[in-house]
Amino acid sequence: MKILDIINLKLIKLPSLIKLSIYIITFSCLTIPFGFYFISNYGSTRFFESFGVVIGAFLAFLFNYLLKGISKDEQISSIIQDIYTELKVLKENLFNDIEKKLFEENKEYFEYKCEYNQEYFAIFHSNSEFLGNIPSKQIRNSIVEIYTIGKSLLDSIILNNNLLDVYLDANARIEKAKYIPDDHSLFYKELRKDYLNKLINQKSNNLIPKYNNLKEKIDNLLYLLEKNGLS
Image (cartoon, rainbow, N blue to C red; front, side):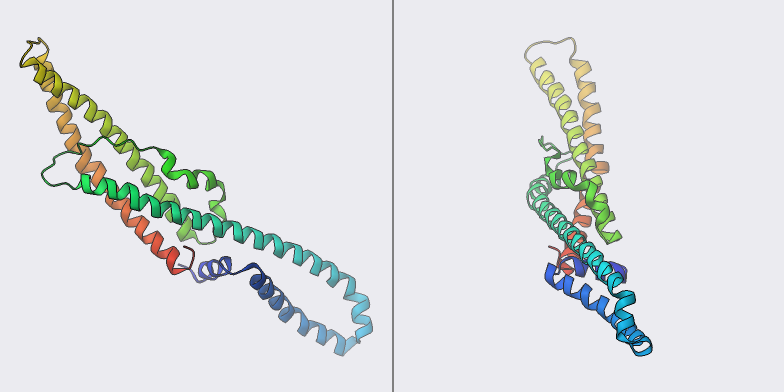
C-alpha cells in the first residue's frame, strides 16, 4: 500500500475534532511565517489592510471545506466498517455452511441444494456508488474483486442446484422404472450419466477454485482493514 494511502486511511479513522485541529495547525504553520515576514517588511497596519479581508474570506472557505471533508471521511469510514461487518458475517455463516459440505470426503459432486441469494451483498450494493471515495486503491480494488468473485460463486451454486435437480429427477425416474416399466428409462440413464459428469466438473472446476479464491481474498482484506484500524 502506498504511503499516501496509509496517511489517508489513518486520517479517516481519527475523530472529527482532532482532524480539524490537525488541518488548522497545518494551515497556521504554512501561513504564519509569511505573515511575520510581511509585517517585518511592510508593517502590521499595511498587512491587515491588504490581507485582512482576503485571509478572513479564505479562512471561512477553508473551514467550510474542512467540515465537508470531515463529513465525507466519516461517511467513508462508516461504509468501510459496514463492508467489514458484511464480509465477516459472510465468512462465518456462508463459508462455514459451504465448506463442510464442499470438501466432504468421498463426494464426487456437490450434492447439497443451497438457497443463497444476493442479499449477502446488501451493504455493497447500497454503497457501491461511494466506493470510489475510498482513498486506498488497494482496498477499493479488493472490495470490488471480492464481490465480483462472490457473485460468480453464488451463480455457480445456483447452476449446481439446477444440474442437481435434473440429475435427481433422472435418477428417481430410473428407480421408478425398476418397478414400473418405462420406455424412456434408457434416455434417463444417459441423462443421469451426462449430468453426473457436469456436476463433477462443476465442483472441481468452478465451486472449489472460486470458493478458495474468495476466501483468501476476504481474509486478506479483513486483515488489511484490521491492521489499519478500520474494522
